[in-house]
Amino acid sequence: MDAGKKLKLIYSLLWDYLGELAAIVPSRKNIFKTESSKIDLETKCWHLYRKLEAATYHCNNIQALHGKLERNIRKWAKNKMKGAKPGEKHQLEIESKKILFEFDAFLAAARSSLDFMASIISRYIRDKDTDEYRGLIKNLPEGPFKEVIVKNYEDWAKNLIDYRDYLLHRGIIEKAVACYDYTKNPDYKNSEIGKILQPPILKHKRPVICPLPRIPNPADRITRYEMFGMQEELPRGLNQTKAKVEIRLRGREVYRKEESAYEVSEGFIEARQLSVDYWSNTLNLALQILKELKKLEFRHR
Image (cartoon, rainbow, N blue to C red; front, side, top):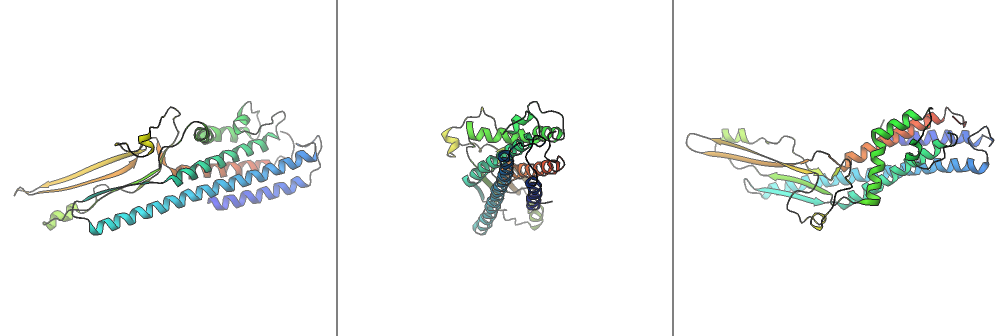
């Protein structure tokens, strides 16, 4: 199921859940004793949905910005190819702050949705009133929620929460770059040699767009040279692979071909993929929780 359908299903489940909630009379037997606490629960449910909508909006923006950068890079390479001399090399590095800004906003919305899930669930657990996902984890009693809450926290939610807190309180990502290498093939007088050397050496060559650390390191420090792209070495998150082919013939003729390509460094991942992974996990968790809530009939567990 794609994310759009998941969001519609979440809306449908919430609508049914709140329809049942409207028919419940506040009492000591239920998870709310007063009309005010009942309305507060309904409010938190709609806040949860709005945060999921916001996370979806920012994640879609990241995908759109990534796609636009990739199309512009390929257009640049095609234009360079027309006027390039044989063997001429070009390297492109584009800064994209917009992806960083959207990623920052995405994490904030996704983290907030986790906290609203925790707040709703805590209503079903006696003496467990919390507005934070982390707070829900602490001393969580056995019950229908424990396995799903703890497993998702350990698998990915802890990393999402830590990432958001890192960006909010302790650091920034110094630069979002999109990089690509292009080398025009030399002209080969020998047609047979040309057939050998014409195909690309690096078969998986493609633009690398906005690599981010999978898990940020709070100990990282950023200099002004990194912040403004003045350093000589590659930006963080990038590796560069270089390859060369050389053919020597008996007549001392030498045919060479060189290529290079950017790759995502170990421990890094493109912003598009990282946001999609967190987004999908957050929607799946919301679906799991709402389906479980439907079974509990507004009683403590």
